[in-house]
Image (cartoon, rainbow, N blue to C red):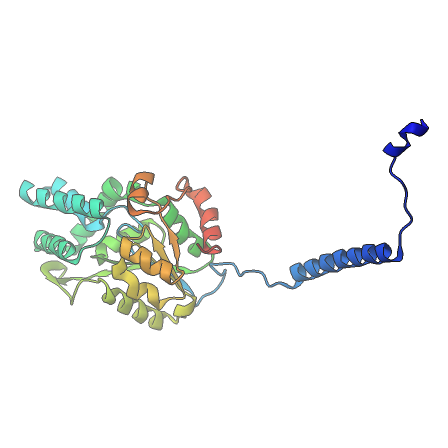
Length: 309
């Protein structure tokens, strides 16, 4: 056995220098542990958003391709054609405009203006009450299944926090109001078509609520409602809505077009894409994973507010 002694480690007495090194290491470990615990205790928690009970905060949502897939005006036109408000030639025009919108994924002012002019000529002479009643039916037929669950969950998160939520859209205010009511939102800002004695004249009151006009509408509503825009949020897919998004303290790019995505990333705005994987790949953004049931989406919505990309 003595021959195997070389296999047994020799016990060496600790020198003064080794004792000092060991004690220093232990003290450093203990100190870093205490500092980490102290940092966890004193570090301020990231505030929840939306802030529950903040009555001076609200949320503003664009409609087309942000809350709903496609353009509300086109879906409305399809419903009117079904009810024989116009001929097949006009339907072909609406179908082309809708196809272009779906392929491009952005609002082109010329195309949108053309669509609005078509709609105004179609509703001219009809009563506002008649179109409102028909609009309820059209929502169920063509729009209800096109609401993005992810964006709907974001709106619900604001509502659950006790905040007001408005749609802000170039679509007719009557259509926007129907959609807002059916989604349980506070209300809607939209393009106003002129009516006399409850009958549409075929003209607009002012200009379509588009681009800078949306920002002015939000600014006016905030002043009237006593809102602090720095505590408000806005959501849109289009670079045309950069003026509105820039007004608020919490801007979000939802299903963004190329220009808005670039602008949002440069300014560290939050981005989310709820389109299909194929569409998201086309525009170069990973598709959001949680576009399932609304119940699950609401929890995810709160989480996304607390995380910047």
